[in-house]
Image (cartoon, rainbow, N blue to C red):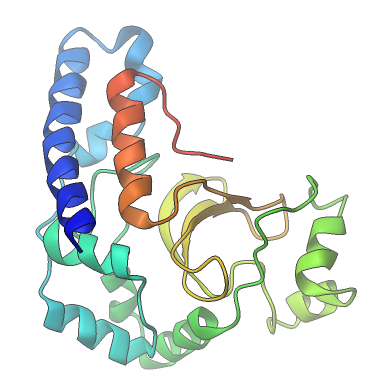
Length: 217
């Protein structure tokens, strides 16, 4: 618990530093650093206010999903959406605004066993060895029938673009880790950070140092 408190304090401090670095770069017209601040004009290195423990409990009850502890800490002590890699952090409360039928479908999808493996052979839609390892030889038929997906058991948190997302793994041996995936089009890449708080702190450091390392193979 003390480690989490220290990491939260560290993130607050480094978020302020990252915001100052971005503002200084923006005032100079971006220059070389422009690519390192992708999406900053949208989120401005700000986070929306945190939510209460009760609000998190209500969200979890609505979807019958238990969020990993480090992410719950982020939501209740730092914020819900805003500053983050690529287009910034999305809010899980966006799912709550969907229809009752859609919410039920999302709940089942998030509760389904996450098939992501930390070590997978590189591949794409043409080289499907990685999909067979994750979903078995009949993965394609089950994917076409919407009964299986490489992204099941995850919560999407960051839109990378072109259908690619950074997701939070909700169950299985990699619970709490972050993964970058694009359904069946490329091999998922599990990030090295052991939990959400560490991943977020690492991203801030990469921004401050001028090298966007949001993808950590």
